[in-house]
Amino acid sequence: PEPTLAGPVATLDWASLASTVAGCRACGLCEGRRNTVFGVGDRQAGWMVVGEAPGEQEDLRGEPFVGPAGQLLDAMLRSLGLSRSGGGVYIANVLKCRPPGNRNPEPAEVASCEPFLRRQVELVAPRIILALGRFAVQSLLRTDEPIGRLRGRVHQYQGIPLVVSYHPAYLLRNLPDKAKAWADLCLAQQVAAQAQAG
Ligand code: URA
Image 1 (tube, protein in one colour):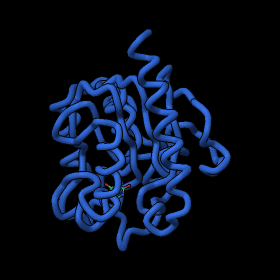
Image 2: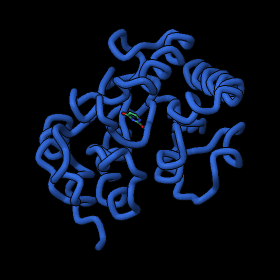
Image 3: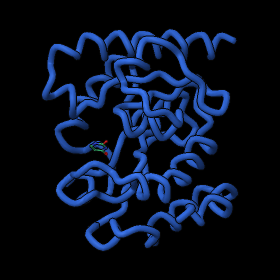
Image 4: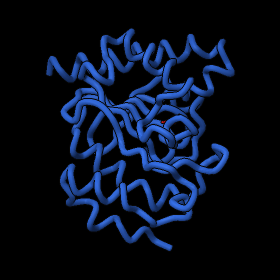
């Protein structure tokens, strides 16, 4: 079915968006979750990082990227002078509820949940979006292309520059690709600096 939330969600403010997510029962993932995972960080940030979905730790704590992949993400952000508590970045996922056993999101789950992410992007209005992993990238850019074909150049999401990179959980398993992720961060930083100057 078509996502029914798209219309109403598009006009919600932060408080009503957060409470709608907290009470959402639009797909089956609500049955297995312990917590919804809305987003964290600076709601007026210049940077927005978009990941895939909560894992076990995130589901327990209700905060994105707090497990092993999150530690790597925090290190990546530190290299840019950003931190989730110190400002400058807002972090959210495509899915707000954990898929069982961390399986991949189903297309219907992405379709029903992505209006929340799209509204978060609209409300933050960042200078740069860093989309990590294929689910974030494919949802925001409406493409089936793999990361390897999309990274290395600047895309646009609703007029906002968007840079694509590998998901930190993937990087933990594929250490040689860290060099490419580093190049992606440098590209995003250049774009963010240009946007700030302009
Ligand atoms: N992976 C993600 O994509 N998001 C999280 O919040 C945690 C792990």
